[in-house]
Image (tube, rainbow, N blue to C red; front, side, top):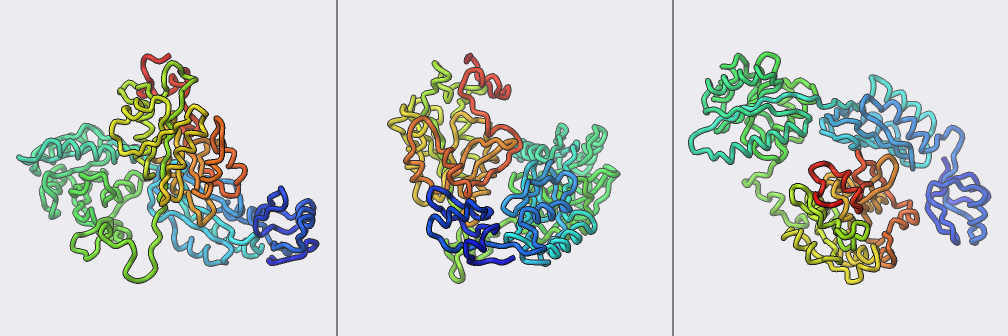
Length: 552
């Protein structure tokens, strides 16, 4: 491939290296310099242009990315179409991703033109999560280089495998001592149930018993009889030895202890055993917390159908430091913003959330759609704001207008900032502009959320936030479902002046076409990002527990 400035005559058939506006036309980076593009450049007085010109044997970037992606596919890992030299690989089911790091390294060291980035080995993924991305760095790859990469990727099957989570019935024994608060036990059960459910399992009715080896053994026997496929014990007191009460209970139930301890903190004091062919774990005290800990490392592998040996547990140390310790001289939460020496670390950008709640709800008159309550007594605007607050977007700003006092009352002291749109009656643009104008200057971007889309979860919002990257040109981020664009939409602050210049009853979506080179579309697993609820008829399509009563 030849790259550099070329006369317009020599550039014909080449690939544009940098986007340029020529008169009313934008000739974008990566586009083919055909006759019309050459004539537009000539008419603008240009005599040369920086471009890439392919040589015999060169493979264009999209074709190269497409060819390299094919041997990397495996069951339950799908791919996107090739665009701008990139193909994304995504999970088709919740599960545990295994990555052959050695083979990935070998592929990445064939040639600088070929790059393959993946999630870490043993990453828990959900449906539609991005697991790897192939990017061809220049505009083409020599054919012989690509052939070597393809052959290497085919050897031994894909280096990426997804082990889907399987449903398991889980038995839980919770031992108790005098003085242990009942609320502690209830919280422990709830957190364990959430862990199991997140991994597609189900928790049998937990058994509470005395902190005694015989009592624990009898409880385990009962759970085995109920069909438990995985057994968990969490004691009133932390296990400190493989002969302690919890492990002894497994032995009393006819089981054995395989390993005690692991190089993961929190999680050091976990005990691995089995009763017959059923794994049995004595959980450490950190299992009472929903935060990531060593218990999650072990459970994710078991639910993915992977056996865990003592050696497997001993090899979990790299990446196993999950907790700060007070004895360290500078825990992260107390560290200065800038290190005392060396370059300052990059911090995640601050992204505000703007929730539009100012509309007059004319399509649902006489009701205000934002104030209709579901069967739990929760208003639509409260549900939307709670979802936004569960995301990483901060600050959260709610734009009010019509029935402003009632909207604020419905949000009842939630940690949000209110922005009143004085001219909300002029249409959607007035509310949008009021919210964008109030975004603090320290924020890099804002995600605009609609007050009538209660099915958009905090996790969905966080997926959009994670894809925002000014360095990589992802300045407008929006969700899609089956190719159709939805909401909420994230905007880099460089677009704020254009947003503040719009008018009428329309939003800023028209700017997506104007700035297509800055757009990142994120495919979602369901249609929540397409569904707003602004008519009485649409309310009937909400999930049963969220349907309002008395509207219709």
